[in-house]
Amino acid sequence: MKAFLSLTTAVVLSIASLATYAADPITIKFSHVVAPDTPKGKAAEKFKQLAEEKTKGAVKVEVHPNSTLYKDKEEMEALQMGAVHMLAPSLAKFGPLGVKEFEVFDIPYIFDGYEALHKVTQGEVGKSLLAKLEAKGVKGLAYWDNGFKVMSANKPLKTVDDFKGLKMRIQSSKVLEAQMRALGANPQVMAFSEVYQALQTGVVDGTENPPSNLYTQKMHEVQKYVTNSNHGYLGYAVIANKAFWDGLTPEVRGQLEEAMKEATDYANQIAKEENDKALEEVKKSGKSEIIELSDDEKKAWKEKLLPVQKDSAGRVGQDLIDSINKATGTN
Ligand code: LMR
Image (cartoon, rainbow, N blue to C red):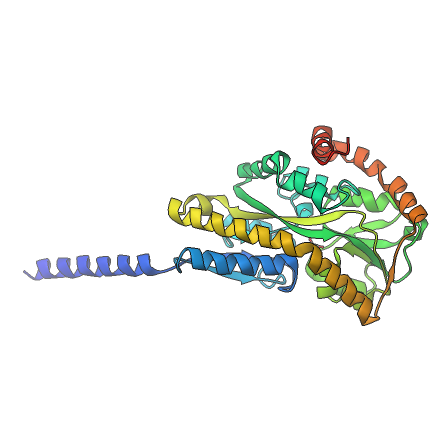
């Protein structure tokens, strides 16, 4: 009798714990390195709100901004190990994961604006690049825009000769390395979280980023000049740990895919405006001078940087470069 009672208790207890388990929300940790008040920061919050709404609380999303959980390199490793579930690293940061093709987005002047870019990120080429992540245990979910980059330093960067000998911080991309070398600068790979201090203390002389990143990290307070060059693009691939994503029920996964679609539309709607606003704020702050290039200067920058496209073929593949140029109508 006693044995029967304890068996019954055990069954009741395990049913109770199953019920608690079923009621517990699935927690998604979403880590990123930029400020909440940026296109990526805002889109991550939008995804959280939509995911929690659409799953009626079955999923809880914890957004960890500003490298508070992991820095650039660590976040990729953490995702693969399942310590975080979602990230949105910039496309320049997939080389260390072994998918160097994403560096094609770093080629200077490969997109002449958002419209051309979307032909790739919202088309077949973009899809096939995301599919390459699967072999690394990573699920590619979407592309989120940020914007076109400005260059900054404590000296005016107007002509291509102005870069000579400058230590310029870059993201971990061989294409960006080639770009800085083409300008005669000395590229230094560094985690995003360390850039402000490196600029402040003179560990590096300058950097490049879209205005929203420059402004929200207060880089303009430690850089006297910002050149509105728009020489290249910086954006993101939103990714998830594949085992985690595939392990969700089809219902929850479908709801999260819907949330991702809407958050992506939102991200890509606000990106340009956020960057325009940030550049205005930098101007208003009076801390750095914004340099606009003349047509002749723009032409000289392009001439100097266009060969980087050819030089990058060995890294990202000529076929990929060709298919991007075809999609954007450049060739
Ligand atoms: C950078 O490291 O400069 C950027 O990739 C940061 C970001 O995520 O936008």
